[in-house]
Image (cartoon, rainbow over all chains, first blue to last red; front, side):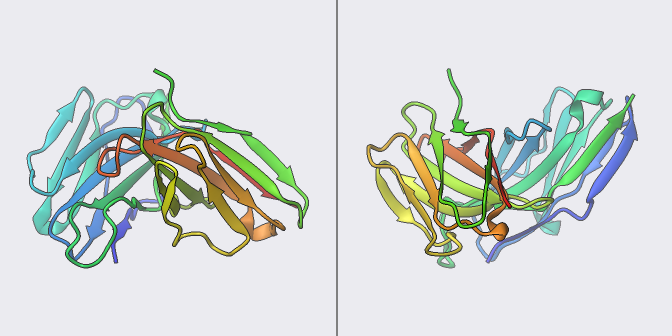
Amino acid sequence: AQKVTQAQTEISVVEKEDVTLDCVYETRDTTYYLFWYKQPPSGELVFLIRRNSFDEQNEISGRYSWNFQKSTSSFNFTITASQVVDSAVYFCALRLHLSNSGGSNYKLTFGKGTLLTVNP
Amino acid sequence: GAGVSQSPRYKVAKRGQDVALRCDPISGHVSLFWYQQALGQGPEFLTYFQNEAQLDKSGLPSDRFFAERPEGSVSTLKIQRTQQEDSAVYLCASSLHDQETQYFGPGTRLLVL
């Protein structure tokens, strides 16, 4: 079975600070996808990024960057120069690609989320 | 284009009532998913449709939960004889096909009194 752990339940920062959200995953499968979603107070899960297990290259998109390290089963998310509008719950999720352990390749397994509060 | 929409956004039900939650996926998306999100938790998988076929209902918590997608577009999640433990946010997601990224709707917040 798959598992995603987001050890940080809540983080509070002051605007313009950098913040890193941690994500550690467990799977016996060798091919999989990792995701980050943002859930603002409105409730909708907003897709941020998808990475596949073949590609460990880090990615940057504006103020967002992601650090994928297969050796430590981690997929951490950094927001640079945080803004009040970044306040939300952030979820890390895993989905198998071609399962060799009998798991489904369409279910998302989510962590419990990290509540980020950016104060002005 | 339009995203995934869900209705109602909020639903209050008395214990024992039946409820029906609607999901309108993104047009053309073959795959549709329902997730349940308890307070302070991440979403958990309930069921999956490919067009009108329900291919996986392993996450439905009891036989009081029933989902359908009769024409391969709109889906309805029905909960019969609601219980307090059914209180949660019910999220619908769709994707072009099951290997593509899932896009979520705003959810229906169900409160059972």
